[in-house]
Image (cartoon, rainbow, N blue to C red; front, side, top):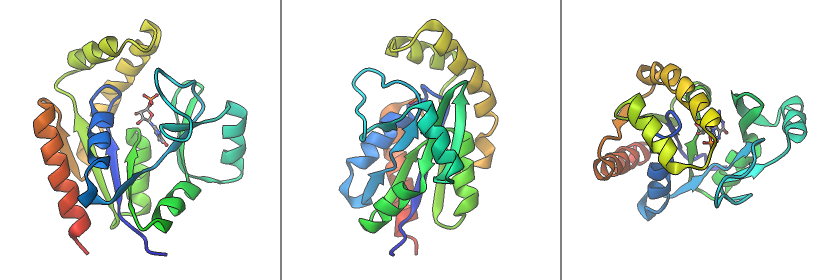
Length: 191
Ligand code: 5GP
């Protein structure tokens, strides 16, 4: 099987990494396909099963852990499990495409360690924790409790940034999108 490249985007929730990943998926020259994670949480807003996530029950998720079906998985928030199924990567490589991930920092670093040469691990840095809070509140898809849980985690996640291959500062979205495109383009054109 032709093994494509792995492009990991990790960041605290609200940093804008999902926006960047969606933008890159629209760039045909990059030949990217989104790694759809399994998640044990409920769909939010307009999210679609089999597109944004494979929404499965906690019980089903635990069965996949036992069967060793995951390349990596994390209990990102209490009782909210997220993971990359091995079958997902195989599916994308079989299409002859490169894989792009939108995953948390621990999962991102795990993929980098498993496939060091093939992976570009990118950390997306928000301007500040206050700005993160503002963005999460603006998104208003979650309760204050859940937002506070995400903020608390953000500070811990920000400290892992130096372990990534590159850090993109998302202070100005247009600049961040351009920088991300160039970085991925350079990486996938390397042998
Ligand atoms: P959200 O609930 O906002 O969609 O995602 C919460 C966090 O879980 C985000 O940082 C998201 O990137 C991360 N996440 C999504 N899928 C995966 C996955 O497969 N593995 C890991 N480790 N984290 C994931």
